[in-house]
Length: 155
Image 1: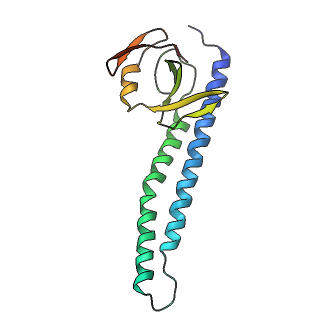
Image 2 (image 1 turned 120 degrees about the vertical axis):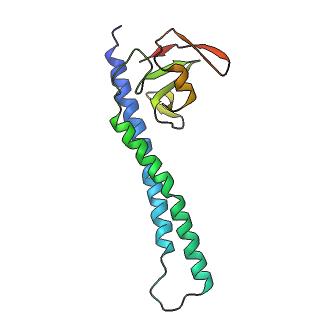
């Protein structure tokens, strides 16, 4: 089944939008980590009271807490960059799927985002819904959480 070229352009726009959003999230996480890491450093004066030390330790803990999100967003950026977003007629990584009037991108999990006037959400290949969708084509049905649903589109 041939896929229209306008879907190819749309998929590249979706990829670019997802990449920009994740790069923004990565930058924010890095900024937060750097800010708290900077606040964790004690100055060069000889004496520090318990309050200074406690504030430094709290900032160091917060910086460490942002290390996880930094790595998670970096991994998502790398996954999006490496993923083939070519048009497809079956559900696989890089495919856009439509069911119940909602659009999903098989890539990495994301919050809902807008692209070309439509709302999309990224789903991971590790998600249970992907397990139910994998390999299906437009018009085929799948069962998830006890409900049968028809796949309206795949591209």
